[in-house]
Image 1 (cartoon, one colour):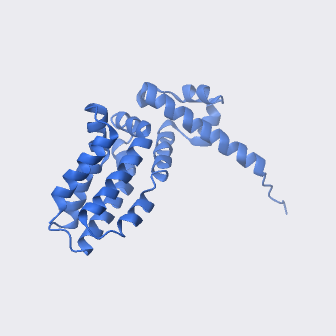
Image 2 (tube, rainbow, N blue to C red; image 1 turned 90 degrees about the vertical axis):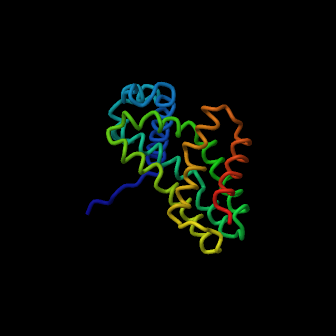
Image 3 (cartoon, rainbow, N blue to C red; image 1 turned 135 degrees about the vertical axis):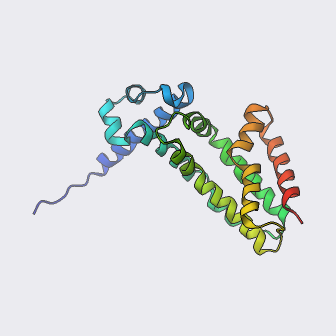
Length: 201
């Protein structure tokens, strides 16, 4: 029998190469737009051969999906939702939700901008958008279900989830901060106030 060989150093090097590729791709997508970036350019920025990009991270579309996936993993939505489940009022829950979604959008704003720019040019923009927003909307639904279970909603969970997405989804933060020039603090405060008014009995 041939014994399989596992090299921790090789695995570490491979992970580092992949990380460099994703970082290079994110920077290029952000600076130049997804549609105008080539795999060759990603390879050059990462300091590897184009074939290494394909073998380590996949095609350009797969790279973008992975960039988004890693951004989702960094969001910390699970811990924020757990904290919200400990609240007993709409205002308290929404205050925590506003802070959690603000931090996620603020910390990941480069990826959010890449996503908005990429959707029209991506090979399957609808699937990418669903992948990008699915867990986000589920976290908002979890909050709506918590408010329902506490007897704090006058509307159904589906409608409440839509209200929370309207107030705290990617578009809300992007509109106020990027397009209108609001500070993150002002946007957080105002969106929390609006959501509380919309949902409180």
